[in-house]
Image (cartoon, rainbow, N blue to C red; front, side, top):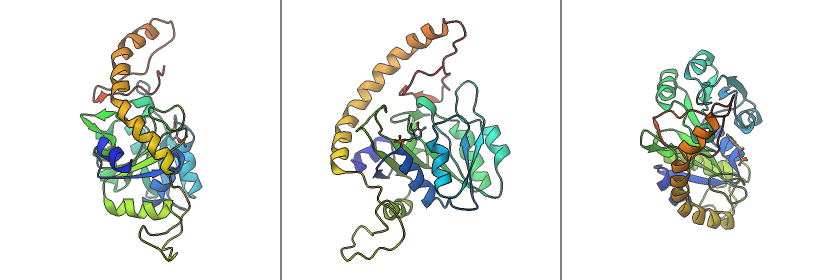
Length: 251
Ligand SMILES: Cc1ncc(COP(=O)(O)O)c(C=O)c1O
């Protein structure tokens, strides 16, 4: 499953874990987040985006979102960067990418990492590339309501092997992949996905493209009907998100 999920998202490496919250925690830990550091998160998101940072002893710094896309506003991110900032965490809200061009540049200029919270963005594309092909770490959820699900589950995709191997240790009680003598090399916990969950997700992945195509076909009609209701403004699509899996109809 890890190989198939990584390939599908254009990433060289994936790690399957217990859920999306743990995916964020494992990713933040290997990106160096801990006491004395800050993680910039959108003010509008599910609580796990900030809880993951807090669980590691870091400060989650909420910043405002764009009023059209509901994704984090790069100008607000820029204003919140401090010498303690370790990670910027955009959330691709309901399948709509945050402005990855602006955020990539901000992160590179500030020398901090980007962690994409892609819990709503399986199969989404930013200018033709999926979350795993954008050069930064991305965390996914497979909880009940997700675009693909096994009841619970999560995954992290990594642009390089070293990060993935460190994450492997964190998610498997600090025990190296080849260890047979209980020589645990770091601290960690048990965030491993079960084989049964992975088997369900392999089947789910084969259905995803067809389901996304159907939602993409139906979204223009749904959003135009929603827009006719007084006071309702559907979430806008940034045209650079050239494939939106439409996890939710937000308005
Ligand atoms: C944006 C976002 N990130 C992370 C999570 C956490 O995922 P999980 O429920 O698999 O722990 C959620 C769950 O709703 C979410 O909406």
